[in-house]
Length: 316
Image (cartoon, rainbow, N blue to C red; front, side, top):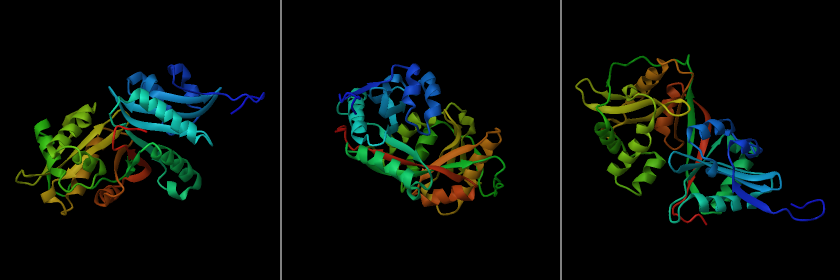
């Protein structure tokens, strides 16, 4: 870009100074824009994790990370028309400042319409951003369905095949989570298993996600046969944004019996009793048995996400 006098305007890459620059940061738009202020207040984002590439007063690209103590997800990456190179320069600079040398950059996630491939403009926007991060060494991990249940949607009555009780604490949950990793169709779990043992993966998932929910663990349920043998579990919960089905699974030896419908109905019933305005859930596109169970339970796909990851700590 040049001035009317023909002078080139340098590209300035920097984090925002604080909330006072949110309007500037939002000159490029995305589905998460309305959450930035609350996330900053709650510590889920930090100004130093929200970066811009500017030519004069024109926002050419932006990127933002989400997390607790450390950035855990790159969930905002937007590029002005024709500014792919500026977007890549932005990511290179920001990752160099945010991610310690030798550490794998956080996963990239983008929320997209359910039919984004059939919408030319949506497809162009998504593929442009994915092509940019691919040039930096990222690669696809998974595409996921984002699902929603609304009040008034029927919930299946208990079938009587299973009983439900509260969990017996972390040790029981981690032990069951470790068992359900056997034959898992979940891409994130498979990625974890490529780097750690099942016991390590289950414990890490519990500690970084389930234990962090602000809702009571008394909502969680273990499904059992009438004789008390565990069949599976569900963790109805609230995260920072919505009521959710956080984790749901059937133990390997009990798969194929349709128990997932009973377990999902119980989790949905618990949250519905709280008078929630919606229940959110997600599952991999490739996890067709779980996707089908959500569909049978009245959950509809309102959005998808595309998730990309880096194999190594080298972002270049």
